[in-house]
Image 1 (cartoon, rainbow, N blue to C red):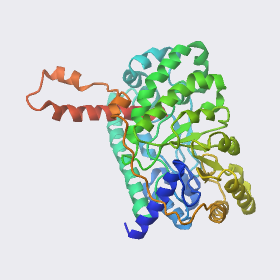
Image 2: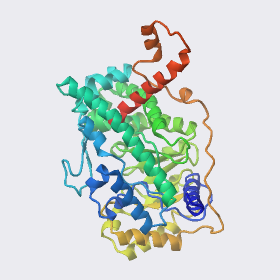
Image 3: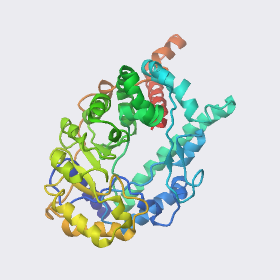
Image 4: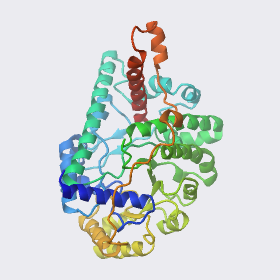
Amino acid sequence: MSADLQKLYEERLGRYQATIALEPTDRIPIATGSNYLAEVYSGCTNQEVIYSPEKWLQAEMDFIKDFPETDVLRDNRVWAPLYDAVGCKTYKFPGRELPARQQFQFVEEEYMQADEYDLLIKNPGSFMLDKFLPRVLSEYGGQDPKRSHMAFLKAGMAQMMTADIMRNRSIKLQTACGMPQPMTGAFVAPFDVLGDVLRGLRGALTDTYRRPKQVLEACDVLVDVMTRFALSTADPFKRYPIFVPTHKACFMSPKQFDTFYWPSFKKVLLNLIDAGYTVRAYLEGDWGQHWHHMLELPKGKVLCDIDTQGDIFKAKADIGHHQAIAGGVPDSMFILGSTQEIDEKVHQLCETVGKGGGYMISGGCNVPYDTKPENFRAMIDAIMRYGWYDKSIQPKPKAAPAAKADYDAIAKQYRVTPWEVRAKELGGVMGDEELIKKPWDDLEAMAFNWMWSWAF
């Protein structure tokens, strides 16, 4: 990595981190969380991006070359062969079920029955292995045991390959382009685990009336599950926020949200903050009746992406003094608007939402893949005209904060077969037990966390 690229990387990352922390920086970051335009800008099909890591990386590098003012970049998040290996039913992919140039789709069904809450609460590992995974992963739930076993072998290999792809991509973008990531690691709110894939929106909301106690107990169990999953996928150097999309909150009344969504979600957020991380939260839909809860969290720890349906000016007034916010350019304007309209909109945002810092220019949680490239360029040019605070500031990355407690004290790590069970089966060991115990429990934890990657 050349000295110039290292300096560029540090400037971009420092600008991004300072804005999240509500600290002074030189200008408003151009830091959309998801930039789906970058997937197709180079001419690749959506299928090529999710099936060919080489074309995906090249597409991003081409995009960075043409839009070098961008401060962080994330577009694709999946490597489709991993999903193919297990026959995952929750996604439809371009080139497979969908046309090659179409965006992937999520398939919501009730993959958990209403009478299975007790098993989920009592033993989440058994629930996943016995109930959920056979329904969601067709290769695992098939009639041929050999094919099922082979699918899990392939899935383990594909998971390692996926991690390698993601790691190499991040390193390449950093060392060859000076480009940081907007987030690393992910989770969903405990209620969204129920509302997305387990019970679906209709089932989960119905359950809040018919079995509210079980819903709350399940969400409490999922606090630890989601905390440990997020930590297992997060950046170990704590440079980047952990990502959380919020899918079902916009469908809930304030009373429903306050009762069923926020308490467990808040616990996960506090756990991750205690572990030394920040969080980037997509407040999908209109969160106007809910986002005041962000004031309950430590200041400058959550970057809130305001969706197009939300009022970003109200968000600035309500929570912008306590948490950073991103957004402001409507999706429709990216797709259908003119460069003049983009310039005027960004100017307005800089003079209002950007005032005092803590703001990043973006679309409504993403930049649409069918954005006009000239409109994205117009947004950048407008920020470079109107988005400066103090050019004398030279942004630098922040030191990684220490965790307030050991991860085991922050959240329980579930395992299907803890070492104590295996040790009893062995009748003891002849040598240093810790040398055997630690890798056993580490692999158990990794496998358990991997199971929950299919739950969102």
